[in-house]
Length: 156
Image (tube, rainbow, N blue to C red; front, top):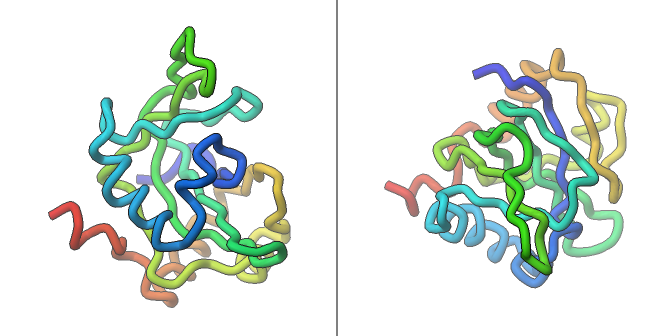
């Protein structure tokens, strides 16, 4: 499926930061936690500062240390933007991700590789990337052996 848009979401911006303390914890979150939530693929968000369109490819940015930003996973957005949940003190709602599209990379994509495709830097900002470069990104994933998710063994 060709995405409607390509966006970067910075994992450290969530209220579940402790869940993303290590790369192994990130893998566990995407491969085990998200599929078991109600509804499956529920990715809680703290604010509506960014709006994703249905069918967006969301690239998840992670960094254990400053200046080590990289893309570690992606998923397609199944919901039409945010599903609002009133009365929650921690989240305004959630994005429902297509759990079949969750791909945790075997070899993370570096900030230099992202810059090589889109001429944009991974920082602490949520990026909107040119969807016409999607095939270039897929080719990079193929070269890095990232077309098959690390989650496969956990979800079969």
